[in-house]
Length: 75
Image (cartoon, rainbow, N blue to C red):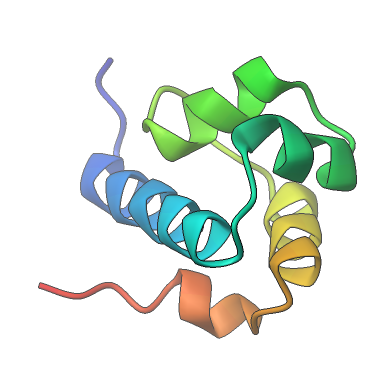
């Protein structure tokens, strides 16, 4: 899959997975909170799809983290 912002989506997915695991949630639990399928959540975390801001905002709320933390890309 070739996307313009591949690396940013990869880092976003890693951050989402990190905060999800830190909260002790499974992908299905977080997906249920966000009202998306577990498959979609997996694809977001594994950089297999683009993700809308609406979904990102919902994920941040469900994880109880500021949205900016999801975009805090470490090198």
